View 1 (cartoon, helix red, strand yellow):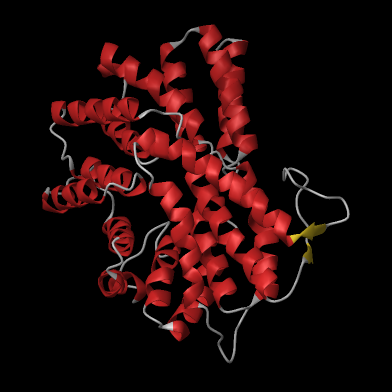
View 2: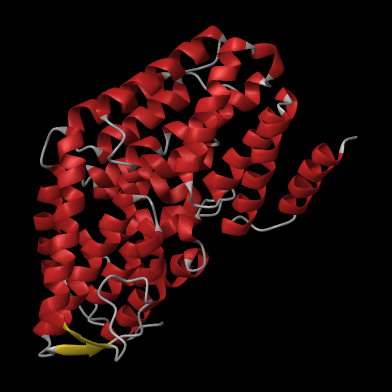
Length: 371
């Protein structure tokens, strides 16, 4: 074995033992650069497969998309070199992430989905996971009719070995019902998960966050408190659940538990600042605005915050004017909304900003709260 190949395998071996994150991704990227220089096709494929997985689970999905694009082209040229099942499974990961980046145009997204359908059909694979991703795409794009159309296709298409597990599918269905504000249905769909009859690596972690708004809208506040107590602990250290964190921040704001809300905001703001998923940043910033508004309505004009210096409006003394914070976050929200709405051809994100403000009508206080 040459020194170059040995170094590549050493890097991949060392990266394998690391937790998902920037260090792991950087080590695999170094191995990939060497593999490309060396020109060994098998190593190029193996390192890209490793990079796709590390980037997806390490929160840098754009790098996964780039690596998969190369892999996809190689699959078309020499399918015998690539494990088909693994390739189709990774394609699902890509489909579930591409709409989170507004610079990826709708025509590009449509082309990627069309290519995925062609690949699945060519291999006799069920289109069920693709319809599931199309349903999510249309929900996040604000296209309710198309989302419902793909939802029906998803549930009416047979499962096969490429389908997501039952728990993951059920969690997405919970989110779908919540999106349409079918709150009783959302909670009913979630029952097998909440009762412990279904679970996987990411379920029920993501499920609890998805039932928070339905519970609040139904005025089932005690259950919402229990959901917070159980669900937040599950995701408080995992950046992949930033959207769910936003729901928990909302709960603290609506219960007027501002001390905990501020602590949660301080703890997770860096995740929102660093994430490349602008839809997730958008959701966290939306709920953060509600926190500032609540503090202001409680008679405060300033707040002491321990924020990361990566935050654009960071202040060394930690004293922040609430009116200025609200204005700053309104500006950030409008910028993100404009990017998505231009891509999607509607005003869904802009309208979401205004709709978010109406959540204040659900404000309530519990006699006893557990932080």
